[in-house]
Amino acid sequence: VQVQTARCSKFYSLPREEVVALECSNTSAESLATLFLTRIAARIAQDHSFRLVTRVDLALAETPGQKVIASRTLHRPKE
Picture 1: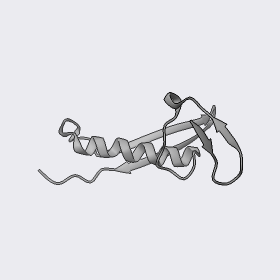
Picture 2: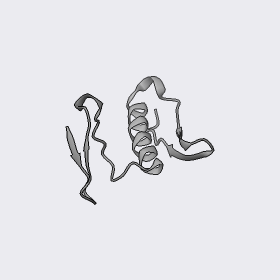
Picture 3: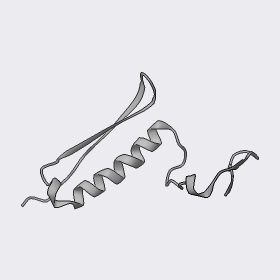
Picture 4: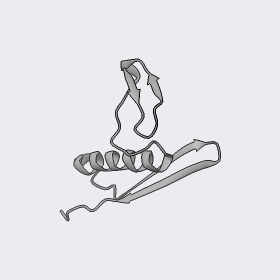
């Protein structure tokens, strides 16, 4: 697999089995935390065994001592 960046003319050659396309504009800790939190919260909201979960917090560390924390409140229909 060859990947060319959209903002410059650099080329990267990576093994296909090690490449995952992500649905985000960049790979900053903030963007990745938002992406992961959205996916995790959607799965939890759909799984009845997690019906008592009302909030999801995710901490993603870029380097030791430097992290981003993302939170999402789950809105559940009343049973």
